[in-house]
Length: 203
Image (cartoon, rainbow, N blue to C red; front, side, top):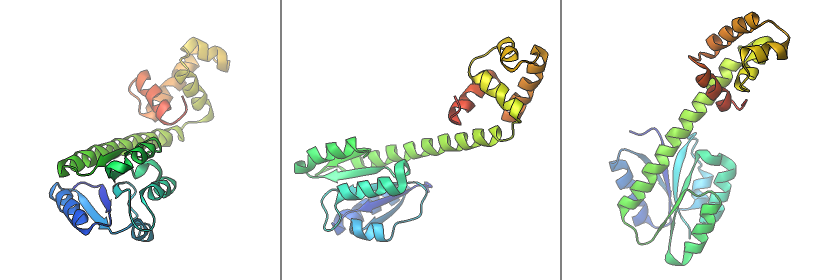
């Protein structure tokens, strides 16, 4: 079972049941809601999830749901919208506002599955990036002030000699601190160290 949930928001009960059945058959955790109001009133606590929502529904419609989810969940809950032919221009606007995809009615159920699969893959990649960033920041927090200065200089592209001049220490001392930085950051080489700096937002 995939760890990410898929939430269906559609006022058509036949559509909801068909999508949930198909997604669960593909090994995905799927739950359905009859309206955006119901969904927002019982908002799940999943850290990340894919949302498939109709555009036209009673009460809160798709566009408003998209805006609310953007505020509440950011990029951790990507949204796919289902739209009728008359709603295509609206769907394009929603794409520009952050919706990851839109599907026109009538559609092949496999098209939904394909879109959801891409959505789930992007979530998996996003979580991996976030985990790597958190790990890099955790390692950075272990550096002493001097080690951090050497780290900053290294990811700026400075040579040992340039670091020595910048920090007014000997090249040999730079080598010692550089070795400590590589060990604490668990970086096997300079390119790995630079990538860690970029992930942590320090390069």
